[in-house]
Length: 183
Picture 1 (tube, rainbow, N blue to C red):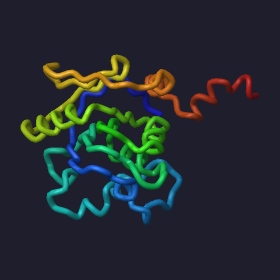
Picture 2 (spheres, rainbow, N blue to C red):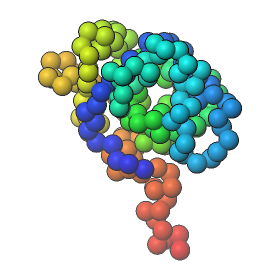
Picture 3 (cartoon, rainbow, N blue to C red):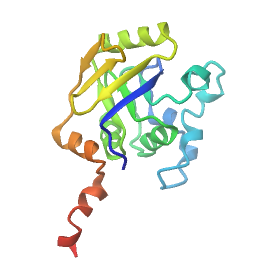
C-alpha cells in the first residue's frame, strides 16, 4: 500500500448526500477480487450525465473528492474504496461516512477526512469559485488547508490508523512485519 503523508491535490466536488456504495461502484462490476480495474466503473450510472463532475475537464486528475454527509452508505463492499483509489483519489472529505466504508478506506490507503458541515460547505463554495481549486492534506499534522494556507481545518484520526497510512501498511503489511517470527 502506498504511504500517505502529505497530499497537495486538485479537488473534485461531488455535491450529493447519502452516496451509497452501489452508486460508487455498481454491483455489476464486482466480478473481480483484484484491487484494480474499477476506475472506469466509478460512479457508473452518473458518468453518463454530461455535467457530472468527473466528466468535466477542470476536474481531470483530481486526487481529493469533496462530498456531503453519509458518504459510502449502503452495502459493505470493499470495491468502493478500490474504485476510488484506482481512479486516482487518495482522500475523501465529507461531514460523515458510513462506518464500514470508513473502515475500508483505511485498509486500502484512502484517507477519509471528517470535517464539520460548515467547513465542508466553505470548501464547496471555494471549489465552485476558483477553477483548479486545490487543498493540502497533511496526515501527520491532521490538517486540511488551502494552498495559500488562508484556511486550515483540523481533523481527527485514530493513532493506529494514522500509523498504518503514514507507513503504507495494510493488514497484510502489518502481518509481514513479523514474517521471521511466523516462520
